[in-house]
Image: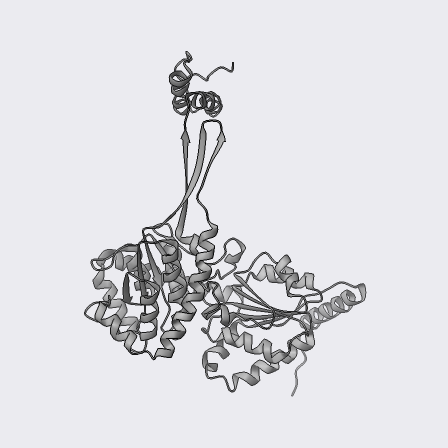
Length: 466
Protein backbone atom coordinates (compact mmCIF):
# COMPACT_ATOMS: atom_id res chain seq x y z
CA UNK A 1 0.00 0.00 0.00
CA UNK A 2 1.45 3.36 -1.03
CA UNK A 3 1.23 6.34 1.28
CA UNK A 4 0.92 9.89 0.08
CA UNK A 5 3.78 12.27 0.89
CA UNK A 6 3.03 14.96 3.48
CA UNK A 7 1.53 18.22 2.19
CA UNK A 8 4.68 20.14 3.26
CA UNK A 9 6.86 17.80 1.19
CA UNK A 10 4.64 18.33 -1.86
CA UNK A 11 4.82 22.10 -1.39
CA UNK A 12 8.61 22.09 -1.23
CA UNK A 13 8.84 19.80 -4.26
CA UNK A 14 6.48 22.06 -6.21
CA UNK A 15 8.48 25.18 -5.35
CA UNK A 16 11.77 23.52 -6.37
CA UNK A 17 10.26 22.22 -9.62
CA UNK A 18 8.70 25.62 -10.40
CA UNK A 19 11.99 27.41 -9.74
CA UNK A 20 13.82 25.00 -12.06
CA UNK A 21 11.31 25.62 -14.85
CA UNK A 22 11.41 29.39 -14.26
CA UNK A 23 15.21 29.47 -14.26
CA UNK A 24 15.35 27.53 -17.50
CA UNK A 25 12.79 29.75 -19.22
CA UNK A 26 14.42 32.93 -17.94
CA UNK A 27 17.84 31.88 -19.21
CA UNK A 28 19.33 31.54 -15.72
CA UNK A 29 22.00 28.89 -15.19
CA UNK A 30 21.87 26.37 -12.38
CA UNK A 31 24.51 24.17 -10.78
CA UNK A 32 22.94 20.77 -10.20
CA UNK A 33 24.16 18.01 -7.90
CA UNK A 34 23.39 14.53 -9.20
CA UNK A 35 25.26 13.08 -6.22
CA UNK A 36 26.25 14.67 -2.89
CA UNK A 37 28.90 13.69 -0.41
CA UNK A 38 28.78 13.50 3.38
CA UNK A 39 27.15 16.50 5.06
CA UNK A 40 29.29 19.00 6.95
CA UNK A 41 27.74 18.26 10.35
CA UNK A 42 28.60 14.56 10.18
CA UNK A 43 32.12 15.38 9.07
CA UNK A 44 32.55 17.89 11.92
CA UNK A 45 31.58 15.27 14.49
CA UNK A 46 34.15 12.85 13.08
CA UNK A 47 36.81 15.58 13.09
CA UNK A 48 36.16 16.29 16.79
CA UNK A 49 36.85 12.68 17.71
CA UNK A 50 40.09 12.73 15.73
CA UNK A 51 41.23 15.94 17.48
CA UNK A 52 40.68 14.47 20.93
CA UNK A 53 42.53 11.26 20.12
CA UNK A 54 45.51 13.08 18.64
CA UNK A 55 45.75 15.51 21.55
CA UNK A 56 45.97 12.63 24.03
CA UNK A 57 48.71 10.86 22.06
CA UNK A 58 50.86 13.99 21.71
CA UNK A 59 50.52 14.82 25.40
CA UNK A 60 51.53 11.29 26.40
CA UNK A 61 54.60 11.32 24.13
CA UNK A 62 55.65 14.71 25.55
CA UNK A 63 55.55 13.27 29.07
CA UNK A 64 56.88 9.76 28.52
CA UNK A 65 58.99 9.87 25.36
CA UNK A 66 60.12 6.58 23.84
CA UNK A 67 58.01 4.50 26.21
CA UNK A 68 54.81 6.12 24.96
CA UNK A 69 55.96 5.90 21.33
CA UNK A 70 56.54 2.17 21.73
CA UNK A 71 53.15 1.61 23.36
CA UNK A 72 51.29 3.39 20.56
CA UNK A 73 53.30 1.63 17.87
CA UNK A 74 52.43 -1.72 19.41
CA UNK A 75 48.78 -0.75 19.82
CA UNK A 76 48.18 0.67 16.34
CA UNK A 77 50.71 -1.18 14.17
CA UNK A 78 51.57 -4.27 16.24
CA UNK A 79 55.19 -3.14 15.87
CA UNK A 80 57.70 -3.03 18.72
CA UNK A 81 61.26 -3.69 17.46
CA UNK A 82 64.38 -3.32 19.56
CA UNK A 83 64.92 0.06 17.90
CA UNK A 84 62.85 2.02 15.41
CA UNK A 85 65.86 3.39 13.49
CA UNK A 86 67.38 1.19 10.79
CA UNK A 87 71.14 0.67 10.71
CA UNK A 88 73.24 0.43 7.55
CA UNK A 89 72.94 -3.35 7.43
CA UNK A 90 69.15 -3.11 7.63
CA UNK A 91 69.11 -0.66 4.74
CA UNK A 92 71.40 -2.76 2.57
CA UNK A 93 69.26 -5.81 3.29
CA UNK A 94 66.12 -3.94 2.17
CA UNK A 95 67.74 -2.78 -1.08
CA UNK A 96 68.85 -6.33 -1.89
CA UNK A 97 65.23 -7.52 -1.74
CA UNK A 98 64.39 -5.43 -4.80
CA UNK A 99 64.88 -6.56 -8.37
CA UNK A 100 67.19 -4.56 -10.65
CA UNK A 101 64.09 -3.32 -12.54
CA UNK A 102 62.46 -2.09 -9.32
CA UNK A 103 65.63 -0.22 -8.35
CA UNK A 104 65.89 1.27 -11.83
CA UNK A 105 62.27 2.45 -11.78
CA UNK A 106 62.69 4.08 -8.36
CA UNK A 107 65.81 5.85 -9.56
CA UNK A 108 64.07 6.98 -12.77
CA UNK A 109 61.27 8.59 -10.76
CA UNK A 110 63.77 10.22 -8.41
CA UNK A 111 65.71 11.63 -11.34
CA UNK A 112 62.57 13.36 -12.64
CA UNK A 113 61.68 14.76 -9.22
CA UNK A 114 65.24 15.83 -8.43
CA UNK A 115 65.56 17.54 -11.79
CA UNK A 116 62.41 19.64 -11.40
CA UNK A 117 63.18 20.42 -7.75
CA UNK A 118 66.67 21.58 -8.78
CA UNK A 119 65.17 23.86 -11.43
CA UNK A 120 62.85 25.32 -8.80
CA UNK A 121 65.75 25.84 -6.40
CA UNK A 122 67.80 27.59 -9.05
CA UNK A 123 64.90 30.00 -9.64
CA UNK A 124 65.23 31.23 -6.06
CA UNK A 125 68.12 33.64 -6.09
CA UNK A 126 69.79 35.39 -3.20
CA UNK A 127 69.66 39.13 -3.81
CA UNK A 128 71.75 42.12 -2.73
CA UNK A 129 71.09 45.61 -4.05
CA UNK A 130 72.04 49.21 -3.22
CA UNK A 131 68.61 50.86 -2.90
CA UNK A 132 70.00 54.29 -2.00
CA UNK A 133 73.57 55.56 -2.03
CA UNK A 134 75.22 53.77 0.91
CA UNK A 135 72.17 51.56 1.74
CA UNK A 136 72.50 47.87 0.83
CA UNK A 137 69.58 45.44 1.27
CA UNK A 138 69.47 41.74 0.56
CA UNK A 139 67.97 38.38 1.32
CA UNK A 140 69.28 34.84 1.59
CA UNK A 141 67.40 31.55 1.27
CA UNK A 142 68.51 29.46 4.25
CA UNK A 143 67.42 25.81 4.64
CA UNK A 144 66.03 24.61 7.96
CA UNK A 145 68.52 22.58 9.99
CA UNK A 146 66.44 19.42 10.43
CA UNK A 147 63.33 18.09 8.73
CA UNK A 148 61.12 15.11 9.51
CA UNK A 149 59.53 13.43 6.49
CA UNK A 150 56.48 11.21 6.96
CA UNK A 151 55.85 8.53 4.34
CA UNK A 152 52.42 6.84 4.53
CA UNK A 153 52.58 3.07 4.23
CA UNK A 154 49.93 1.38 6.31
CA UNK A 155 47.38 0.42 3.62
CA UNK A 156 49.58 1.08 0.59
CA UNK A 157 53.37 1.44 0.51
CA UNK A 158 53.56 5.00 -0.83
CA UNK A 159 57.10 4.78 -2.17
CA UNK A 160 56.73 8.05 -4.07
CA UNK A 161 56.24 10.04 -0.85
CA UNK A 162 59.87 9.31 0.01
CA UNK A 163 60.99 10.95 -3.23
CA UNK A 164 58.70 13.92 -2.75
CA UNK A 165 59.76 14.74 0.80
CA UNK A 166 63.30 13.48 1.45
CA UNK A 167 64.70 14.25 -1.96
CA UNK A 168 63.12 17.70 -2.09
CA UNK A 169 64.52 18.53 1.36
CA UNK A 170 67.98 17.46 0.26
CA UNK A 171 67.82 19.52 -2.95
CA UNK A 172 66.87 22.49 -0.74
CA UNK A 173 70.03 21.86 1.31
CA UNK A 174 68.58 20.57 4.60
CA UNK A 175 71.57 19.10 6.54
CA UNK A 176 69.67 16.50 8.60
CA UNK A 177 66.64 14.66 7.27
CA UNK A 178 64.77 12.00 9.25
CA UNK A 179 62.37 9.88 7.26
CA UNK A 180 59.80 7.51 8.70
CA UNK A 181 57.13 5.10 7.47
CA UNK A 182 54.96 2.59 9.30
CA UNK A 183 55.68 -1.13 9.00
CA UNK A 184 53.95 -2.84 6.09
CA UNK A 185 52.53 -6.26 6.88
CA UNK A 186 54.71 -6.53 9.96
CA UNK A 187 58.07 -5.41 8.53
CA UNK A 188 59.88 -2.46 6.94
CA UNK A 189 58.78 -2.17 3.33
CA UNK A 190 61.97 -2.72 1.29
CA UNK A 191 61.00 -0.37 -1.56
CA UNK A 192 60.15 2.48 0.83
CA UNK A 193 63.42 1.98 2.70
CA UNK A 194 65.34 1.91 -0.59
CA UNK A 195 63.61 5.06 -1.82
CA UNK A 196 64.40 6.90 1.43
CA UNK A 197 68.01 5.77 1.20
CA UNK A 198 68.45 6.72 -2.47
CA UNK A 199 66.84 10.10 -1.76
CA UNK A 200 69.46 10.86 0.89
CA UNK A 201 67.75 10.37 4.26
CA UNK A 202 70.19 10.75 7.16
CA UNK A 203 68.09 8.56 9.47
CA UNK A 204 65.37 6.06 8.57
CA UNK A 205 62.71 5.05 11.08
CA UNK A 206 60.10 2.33 10.84
CA UNK A 207 57.36 4.07 12.77
CA UNK A 208 53.91 5.26 11.73
CA UNK A 209 50.94 7.41 12.61
CA UNK A 210 50.61 10.18 15.16
CA UNK A 211 53.34 8.62 17.29
CA UNK A 212 55.85 9.11 14.45
CA UNK A 213 55.16 12.79 13.71
CA UNK A 214 54.82 13.64 17.41
CA UNK A 215 58.13 11.95 18.25
CA UNK A 216 59.94 13.89 15.52
CA UNK A 217 58.38 17.19 16.56
CA UNK A 218 58.79 16.79 20.33
CA UNK A 219 61.98 14.72 20.36
CA UNK A 220 62.51 11.66 22.51
CA UNK A 221 65.47 9.84 24.04
CA UNK A 222 66.21 8.15 20.71
CA UNK A 223 64.67 10.49 18.13
CA UNK A 224 66.10 13.93 17.45
CA UNK A 225 63.62 16.80 17.38
CA UNK A 226 63.25 18.43 13.98
CA UNK A 227 62.46 21.98 12.92
CA UNK A 228 59.88 21.04 10.31
CA UNK A 229 57.44 18.23 9.52
CA UNK A 230 56.42 17.37 5.97
CA UNK A 231 54.53 14.67 4.15
CA UNK A 232 50.96 13.49 3.59
CA UNK A 233 49.00 11.16 5.84
CA UNK A 234 45.59 10.10 7.00
CA UNK A 235 43.24 12.30 9.04
CA UNK A 236 45.12 11.52 12.26
CA UNK A 237 48.52 12.45 10.84
CA UNK A 238 47.07 15.65 9.34
CA UNK A 239 45.51 16.58 12.69
CA UNK A 240 48.79 15.86 14.51
CA UNK A 241 50.61 18.24 12.18
CA UNK A 242 47.93 20.87 12.80
CA UNK A 243 48.31 20.58 16.58
CA UNK A 244 52.12 20.58 16.40
CA UNK A 245 52.29 23.58 14.05
CA UNK A 246 54.00 26.45 15.83
CA UNK A 247 56.23 24.18 17.82
CA UNK A 248 57.61 23.10 14.45
CA UNK A 249 57.01 24.29 10.93
CA UNK A 250 54.95 22.19 8.56
CA UNK A 251 54.64 22.01 4.81
CA UNK A 252 50.83 22.18 4.72
CA UNK A 253 47.77 20.35 5.98
CA UNK A 254 47.81 17.33 3.68
CA UNK A 255 45.03 15.01 4.72
CA UNK A 256 43.09 12.37 2.78
CA UNK A 257 43.53 12.60 -0.98
CA UNK A 258 41.03 14.65 -2.99
CA UNK A 259 40.44 14.64 -6.71
CA UNK A 260 38.29 16.81 -8.97
CA UNK A 261 37.63 15.82 -12.58
CA UNK A 262 36.59 18.71 -14.82
CA UNK A 263 35.27 17.25 -18.07
CA UNK A 264 33.10 17.89 -21.10
CA UNK A 265 32.02 15.60 -23.91
CA UNK A 266 35.49 15.69 -25.49
CA UNK A 267 36.18 12.65 -23.23
CA UNK A 268 34.13 9.62 -22.34
CA UNK A 269 32.70 8.10 -19.18
CA UNK A 270 35.31 5.33 -18.99
CA UNK A 271 38.17 7.82 -18.65
CA UNK A 272 36.28 9.94 -16.11
CA UNK A 273 35.41 6.89 -14.01
CA UNK A 274 38.95 5.52 -14.09
CA UNK A 275 40.38 8.84 -12.95
CA UNK A 276 37.80 9.18 -10.16
CA UNK A 277 38.32 5.67 -8.78
CA UNK A 278 42.09 5.90 -9.23
CA UNK A 279 42.09 8.40 -6.38
CA UNK A 280 39.10 7.12 -4.42
CA UNK A 281 41.09 3.96 -3.71
CA UNK A 282 43.47 5.95 -1.50
CA UNK A 283 41.15 5.59 1.47
CA UNK A 284 37.54 5.56 2.60
CA UNK A 285 37.58 9.31 3.30
CA UNK A 286 38.97 10.46 -0.05
CA UNK A 287 36.57 12.74 -1.97
CA UNK A 288 36.28 12.17 -5.73
CA UNK A 289 34.22 14.76 -7.61
CA UNK A 290 33.10 15.04 -11.23
CA UNK A 291 32.36 18.57 -12.47
CA UNK A 292 30.93 18.73 -15.99
CA UNK A 293 28.76 20.75 -18.34
CA UNK A 294 27.19 17.59 -19.73
CA UNK A 295 24.45 15.79 -17.83
CA UNK A 296 24.76 12.96 -20.34
CA UNK A 297 28.46 12.48 -19.46
CA UNK A 298 27.63 12.81 -15.75
CA UNK A 299 25.06 10.03 -15.79
CA UNK A 300 27.18 7.79 -18.00
CA UNK A 301 30.13 8.27 -15.64
CA UNK A 302 28.04 7.36 -12.59
CA UNK A 303 26.98 4.15 -14.34
CA UNK A 304 30.55 3.44 -15.41
CA UNK A 305 31.82 3.91 -11.86
CA UNK A 306 29.39 1.26 -10.65
CA UNK A 307 30.52 -1.09 -13.42
CA UNK A 308 34.21 -0.61 -12.64
CA UNK A 309 33.64 -1.07 -8.90
CA UNK A 310 32.57 -4.64 -9.64
CA UNK A 311 36.00 -5.48 -11.07
CA UNK A 312 38.38 -3.05 -9.33
CA UNK A 313 40.71 -4.95 -6.95
CA UNK A 314 40.61 -2.04 -4.47
CA UNK A 315 36.83 -1.66 -4.66
CA UNK A 316 36.49 -2.44 -0.95
CA UNK A 317 38.00 0.98 -0.21
CA UNK A 318 37.06 2.91 -3.34
CA UNK A 319 33.38 1.99 -3.08
CA UNK A 320 33.15 3.41 0.45
CA UNK A 321 34.92 6.60 -0.58
CA UNK A 322 32.65 7.01 -3.59
CA UNK A 323 29.46 6.25 -1.66
CA UNK A 324 30.22 8.61 1.24
CA UNK A 325 32.30 11.38 -0.34
CA UNK A 326 31.78 11.15 -4.11
CA UNK A 327 29.97 13.98 -5.88
CA UNK A 328 28.70 14.66 -9.39
CA UNK A 329 28.01 18.29 -10.30
CA UNK A 330 26.55 19.58 -13.56
CA UNK A 331 27.07 23.18 -14.68
CA UNK A 332 25.94 25.01 -17.81
CA UNK A 333 29.09 26.97 -18.70
CA UNK A 334 32.85 26.97 -18.35
CA UNK A 335 32.50 30.08 -16.18
CA UNK A 336 30.27 28.20 -13.74
CA UNK A 337 32.70 25.30 -13.73
CA UNK A 338 35.59 27.59 -12.80
CA UNK A 339 33.52 29.21 -10.05
CA UNK A 340 32.56 25.85 -8.56
CA UNK A 341 36.09 24.44 -8.95
CA UNK A 342 37.58 27.39 -7.09
CA UNK A 343 34.99 26.94 -4.35
CA UNK A 344 35.91 23.25 -4.02
CA UNK A 345 39.66 24.10 -4.05
CA UNK A 346 40.63 20.49 -4.63
CA UNK A 347 44.04 18.96 -4.10
CA UNK A 348 44.16 17.39 -7.59
CA UNK A 349 42.30 18.84 -10.55
CA UNK A 350 42.19 16.78 -13.75
CA UNK A 351 40.99 18.95 -16.65
CA UNK A 352 39.72 17.03 -19.68
CA UNK A 353 37.93 19.58 -21.84
CA UNK A 354 38.21 20.95 -25.36
CA UNK A 355 40.09 23.96 -23.96
CA UNK A 356 42.00 22.95 -20.80
CA UNK A 357 44.03 26.16 -20.94
CA UNK A 358 40.86 28.08 -20.10
CA UNK A 359 41.01 26.52 -16.64
CA UNK A 360 44.78 27.04 -16.35
CA UNK A 361 44.28 30.73 -17.09
CA UNK A 362 41.20 31.29 -14.93
CA UNK A 363 41.32 28.96 -11.93
CA UNK A 364 42.99 30.23 -8.74
CA UNK A 365 42.38 27.53 -6.09
CA UNK A 366 43.98 24.12 -6.65
CA UNK A 367 46.87 22.00 -5.46
CA UNK A 368 47.96 20.84 -8.91
CA UNK A 369 46.43 20.89 -12.38
CA UNK A 370 46.60 17.98 -14.81
CA UNK A 371 45.78 19.37 -18.22
CA UNK A 372 44.30 17.17 -20.93
CA UNK A 373 43.54 13.45 -21.10
CA UNK A 374 47.13 12.45 -21.87
CA UNK A 375 48.20 13.23 -18.31
CA UNK A 376 46.56 12.24 -15.04
CA UNK A 377 46.92 12.45 -11.27
CA UNK A 378 48.74 9.13 -11.10
CA UNK A 379 51.58 10.55 -13.23
CA UNK A 380 51.96 13.40 -10.74
CA UNK A 381 51.66 11.06 -7.77
CA UNK A 382 54.44 8.77 -8.89
CA UNK A 383 56.88 9.84 -11.53
CA UNK A 384 56.44 12.88 -13.77
CA UNK A 385 58.48 15.25 -11.58
CA UNK A 386 56.10 17.62 -9.80
CA UNK A 387 55.55 17.13 -6.08
CA UNK A 388 52.54 15.13 -4.93
CA UNK A 389 52.29 16.55 -1.40
CA UNK A 390 49.49 19.05 -1.96
CA UNK A 391 46.94 21.07 0.05
CA UNK A 392 43.61 19.43 0.95
CA UNK A 393 40.43 20.50 2.76
CA UNK A 394 40.20 23.78 0.79
CA UNK A 395 43.66 24.89 1.91
CA UNK A 396 44.55 25.47 -1.75
CA UNK A 397 42.84 28.84 -1.22
CA UNK A 398 46.01 30.09 0.46
CA UNK A 399 48.91 27.73 -0.24
CA UNK A 400 50.46 25.60 -2.93
CA UNK A 401 52.08 22.22 -2.46
CA UNK A 402 55.40 21.04 -1.10
CA UNK A 403 58.46 22.22 -3.02
CA UNK A 404 62.04 23.21 -2.24
CA UNK A 405 60.91 26.66 -1.16
CA UNK A 406 59.02 25.16 1.79
CA UNK A 407 62.31 24.06 3.33
CA UNK A 408 63.90 27.49 2.93
CA UNK A 409 63.67 30.54 5.15
CA UNK A 410 63.95 33.77 3.18
CA UNK A 411 65.90 35.97 5.59
CA UNK A 412 66.68 39.62 4.94
CA UNK A 413 69.69 41.69 5.92
CA UNK A 414 70.79 45.30 5.60
CA UNK A 415 74.07 47.16 5.54
CA UNK A 416 74.71 50.93 5.65
CA UNK A 417 78.09 51.75 4.18
CA UNK A 418 78.45 55.53 4.64
CA UNK A 419 78.05 58.09 7.42
CA UNK A 420 75.91 60.24 5.15
CA UNK A 421 73.45 57.39 4.46
CA UNK A 422 73.16 56.48 8.14
CA UNK A 423 72.42 60.09 9.13
CA UNK A 424 69.93 60.62 6.30
CA UNK A 425 67.95 57.45 7.06
CA UNK A 426 68.24 58.24 10.78
CA UNK A 427 66.54 61.64 10.43
CA UNK A 428 63.43 60.20 8.80
CA UNK A 429 63.39 57.20 11.10
CA UNK A 430 63.53 59.46 14.18
CA UNK A 431 60.46 61.42 13.12
CA UNK A 432 58.50 58.30 12.17
CA UNK A 433 59.26 56.68 15.53
CA UNK A 434 57.96 59.70 17.41
CA UNK A 435 54.78 59.67 15.36
CA UNK A 436 54.22 56.24 16.91
CA UNK A 437 55.32 57.37 20.42
CA UNK A 438 58.32 55.04 20.38
CA UNK A 439 60.92 57.25 22.08
CA UNK A 440 63.45 54.43 22.50
CA UNK A 441 63.23 53.51 18.85
CA UNK A 442 63.64 57.17 18.01
CA UNK A 443 66.77 57.45 20.12
CA UNK A 444 68.36 54.57 18.20
CA UNK A 445 67.99 56.74 15.11
CA UNK A 446 69.00 59.94 16.92
CA UNK A 447 72.28 58.42 18.05
CA UNK A 448 73.26 57.69 14.45
CA UNK A 449 72.37 61.24 13.42
CA UNK A 450 74.62 62.60 16.18
CA UNK A 451 77.51 60.24 15.50
CA UNK A 452 77.48 60.08 11.72
CA UNK A 453 75.68 63.31 10.80
CA UNK A 454 77.48 65.39 13.39
CA UNK A 455 74.27 67.14 14.41
CA UNK A 456 73.24 68.33 17.87
CA UNK A 457 70.04 66.34 18.50
CA UNK A 458 68.27 66.37 21.87
CA UNK A 459 67.74 63.07 23.68
CA UNK A 460 64.39 61.37 22.94
CA UNK A 461 63.30 64.22 20.64
CA UNK A 462 62.55 63.92 16.93
CA UNK A 463 65.23 65.19 14.57
CA UNK A 464 64.14 68.47 13.03
CA UNK A 465 64.06 68.63 9.24
CA UNK A 466 66.76 70.78 7.65
